[in-house]
Image: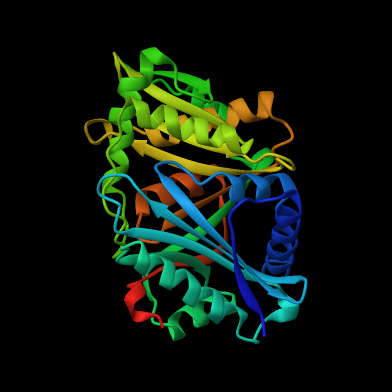
Length: 327
């Protein structure tokens, strides 16, 4: 019988064991996709994320780690009802109750922390979706996961060179410059109206401290954060963010892209994303691919990504459940 242990002081051996489980799990479920590096996993289990803390568990059979689970507990105003978790079971130890034991442990901790909503993501192509549905989770948002070959992106130079009267491009690495911090916080609020299906994400209030803290968390993990923005006078009308993971940084991950409501319909989203690609090609040639996801009903952003050459990779779903329903 596997025993579940809470990790409090994470050692190098804990990180190595965690990495082995996650890498094996992802290699089994997505054999054509790059495996996470040890440095990436180290950042994930030692850094809790912005305005949150996390709890970690491992399942063991004798001295072998058979599964892992991480519960992120949001602390910011408007999100204290929320817990987000990831769970992996080594392929050699699946269908033995390890996942169920870990899930019950996560749910019990969420109840103890007064959380009303647990959220988790699973691909429709894996057994994870059926596992969650069998345990009372409901699909609240369907996403299309997309992939772009950076070298094959279409029309980048022409798009970047298109004039947008009254607007100009700027970019920065890591933390936002002080003179743009307030404008960036205001632009970040534009993410609040993106399609979110029935997900109970709560509300997030962006201010200058939060935008700086977010970038510092990424830096603490060892990852690299790039931002390109379209300026209109002293405001940021639109922006896009990209994260290059520590270690094998051949696949970058798209973070937020948004255009402020009063500036929509002018092609700014396509413009900043093309400018990001131009920057990548010039200064980060090791980045070969960009991964992003879009809600399936976000027709505008799907069209922007299709225009640049993103292609469908797979579908994924976001599930949620009241932890009081899991026993």
